[in-house]
Image (tube, rainbow, N blue to C red):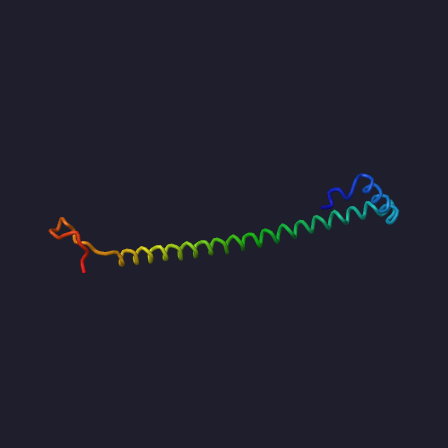
Length: 102
């Protein structure tokens, strides 16, 4: 979105304005302060990602186990219903005919 907004000249002008505003003597201290702030911010973001990532993985693992258990139970119930509703035949080997039993 802002890929073409800043060219080399824009950045030079921004740097000149910063030097004029803060003065050349305060720039090293300002850069050090910004660097420390960025380091702290990155550390906090990393910590938050690790904490939320491990919680999320545990939640997903628990959800997956629960979904697998439900799916298996539904399959077993469907198999039982199909077996119970299927017509029963006498086996011709047993001397019966192949018509369904009543």
